[in-house]
Length: 524
Image 1 (tube, rainbow, N blue to C red):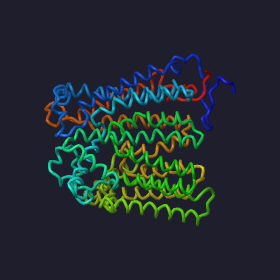
Image 2: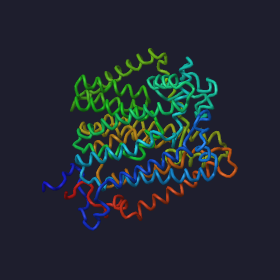
Image 3: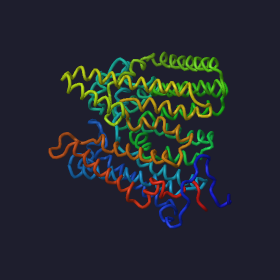
Image 4: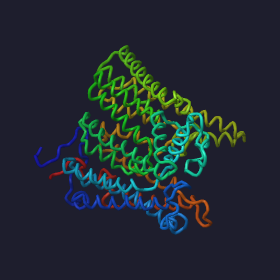
């Protein structure tokens, strides 16, 4: 190989040689890409002032220049358009940076890091978009700060809960979170007092800590597989969906994912007692944020058992890992007074479903068929819910199968697969659920064939869904409502995506292997 040719990662062979005729699309300084992406992020930030979520008690509702953005049809339409265009600009420039940084060296690290920071920073100031779960965090914190157990009392047990923005579904529901996060919610509620706006930005700071952990451990995990860590971080942290879910929405999944990745890294890199004890502790901390992290725990036991371990040895270390984790969770429960209340709270979101998941779609079809035959809605709903539960059980059983089958060198990928199977067979799928397992696939290798195409297109789909799913539109406008806003967002985002895939002379080369120049090798 010529010294002027980039090193190709194993398994990432280029599919098409560099073509000088397309140099204006696939080469040149990344500065323009960084700037345009930053403009897109700024558009999203400004759009959030009009269609982002705010509590009724928020002081921002009384700001003179925000009022016309939120309470007039022209202001709302303008903000929806800015949200769509800004989000799709981020998608485009994320793809374009892949073309501009075909050689993932120290120069690429500077550009990739700079672009990710420039795109993230505006979202630190945005109002919550895509989800209003962060308001439920504050409401649950107020419950705990008042001396009540959130697993036993819903957010309606404290005064004026509805004024602080929490969704009505949490009024009598237990939070599906662990004791560590409930204590954090309590601290935030105490520090912010009655200021819901202060609380929102404190939770965003917490999410930012989780993002920093992810950005730190993704390259380290990638290095264990011989994967370029700069490229891995670009595919994960700079992903527009990642920025939307973990920064703009401020989901606690960011902290959970960061803790899981940290735990897996120490267990995988050391594979000794100290490393695996640290791995168990970090993953247990992730469980104490959000219990879905339990899926990753058995893989720590496999790292601890060692390569080529016999079945009796695996079982011993699985039992040891579980015992240590349960002891730690028991200690947390005793200290906080919450005990194992999170176990019963896992059923809080049990009845939810969404139309585009395989299980959700089939369940809805079954429901409609039963209703058309029997006319009995109660019977149809019961059969539908049973089907949903069978889907969840299937996902769990397949996740268990990944724990007992497969090569030792694929343990990290198998951990991601286990999380992915639990998500895929659930009737309910939120965009941030994908971010639980995507880092595991990226650090263990995403090929430049259909895998990369699927990753790009899946990201674009969920960005489109996010910008059109939850728009904060005032219900008191006579000539505009949330459904109209969603329709505008869907039409604009689909048109933009269609252009990116089929007509944009640059991005269509990323999304079509036949026209794509090498993403990993180019003369320099």
